[in-house]
Length: 321
Image: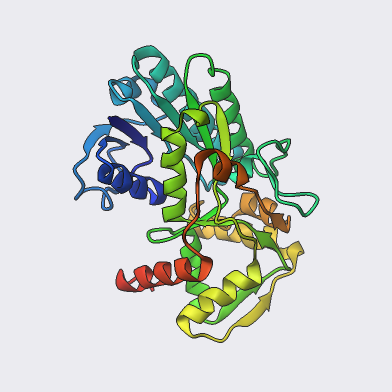
């Protein structure tokens, strides 16, 4: 079986590439000329140059592929239109390419996000049946991408996967939190509750959803099936570094200013931006993965403490920390 992966050079995409190769798939990776290919350059993959916002470049990429894993997307930006250009128009383009040239597609998997549905407003984990109420530009763009795909349900056998916060080796977003904790700093703006998933469990969930006939036309949350507080996460990381933590209380009222400053200093590349602050202003980001457990026989294997240790070890071995 041949699979196309968009976003293959990224954190999640590179892990999916490795996993599919181990399962015997032939893997084609859609990359740009400027892509950093360090995580896949030693893998036996076929490279195809193109861009999701360039429709003509996608026809060759999707040709003769039985599986398309659309992971490419924009997770941090300063402007709403940037999210919609990449996440919505990019998804629309690859769907059009699939419809124009793919003859024997078995599955189109869209990697969405919990942000597409939004936080829990009643303190209970949201499910796939929860009416989406995204609170960020990013979340709204991912929901719009889902809706575009659903319009083609009679023509494309698709599955949508919505992970919550994802962590593991190669991740650059949680890395910043690890870096602060290693210095003994715990930025705190109030108690919050989160669903999370370690990268290996997410990859397993993605592949199960792609290979299951039951998953056609379905949407799944993939988590570690546990509830975590921000304090638990912080102290779990601190334990790995054998660090005592100092809580640095950040009033929610000043967070937009700090995010705006972070945007300017990082030129829009920081995960801590004004759009992320819109999400952080809600304190319950729980989602329920029981549908995936029931329909896909998904079973998370990695506990938080174990996953945090593996992630921290990778950061140290690769001299990120």
